[in-house]
Length: 571
Figure (tube, rainbow, N blue to C red):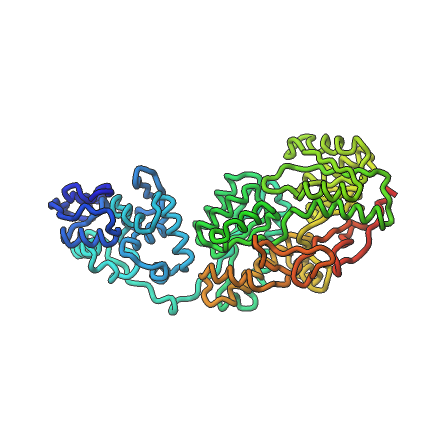
């Protein structure tokens, strides 16, 4: 048969496990040379022409699965036990629902396994994957699923005959219907920095995730099903680490993916899109928002749980203008500086900030950081930024290490510039490491934990559970994300329906400890608003200042808790 690797060479069906079958037969085949026949139909045709023969080159016992590695076609692949079971079932042409029911997994997990098998085998369809399995003998015994599924296939008859001869293990009894089994746990997959860059923040994320899951399970779970976290460490600056983390989580069949901020964020988008799993990330990236907006069909299940970075630089300029024109502090310089770490997919809205600065009478300079990961890169960049007097310096990095180095450099230089950071001071270790030098630092975030009743109650529960006070951003964000997912699961008729879950996420705003999440936007990023917008339907960008060791919201509409104070060293 044209296009096949071993099916039609005088019908020589060989077995790679001779102890399993006592005879190897040879017979002339009269099958048509037609590659348009689907794999399952082609298999049936060969079974009818050559009854009793196995149209594959080998079979594997379950005891061999963990060691199995094969070539199909012309490429080395490695399959897990569950993947081989799914691949074996594919030759009989089942639906995802049938695979899920007979193997005791969810439809989403079944679809994920099929996607991974197609990628490993280099095949465009599940039918082609089944053909490859037949050609290379990439099938396992006992045959998975219902016995009846294979009864009319030559593979089923041969395995049954071998079992009667005592040369093969018996086909297992079918599993009980899903309705008779205990409901499977729902698994939240999380790629988070447990070590390396951003690990201080990673602990906040993990704790928020754990607290949400514990509270959900304490009230009965989601429709009687418990929720469990599957966390994989990721080095956020490494694309290879991102790919490894996502592959591991998807291979485990998680029901939803989550992550913080990643340098290789587009890798997460692509892998989640291929797997069809809902994915909620916190990249704060205008580039990722545009990626979803420009291809909504492909990325319809991907959501950014915070507004994008594109407002950071313009808001920095606007904030300084308000201080200069109406505030208690009047800077002596008419120049602003931004010291920026190059971070893939993030630009902070610098070009628009230049236009705002020109309109407001500021000179705006942007200084890149060279060798941001170590050495004196930040110190040298800060020194360059304030060589000419500046009213304020925006520290363009999400990482605590970077922000600590920048603020320390400003103090060492005895600069009169106001330090204005992005996000990093939300993490408690920022204040712990800087001590008194953190006093007066202003910082902004697109998603921050409010100081209202809801936010304070969350902070108390978090502190009671973990013995530490939560930060003001990602602890609450991770908590809200799981609660939002659980709400969608509870509301959808089919928890395994990823499209239904995504539709619910888009349609219904959710009020959490970090404000309102509204994903009804073209790029499916949480809707953000200016201070004069409607905070009941979106999240305003919050601006905090560290005052007497406490986080005070000095901009944020109705969620403001205090006013700007001139730092003592600038008074």
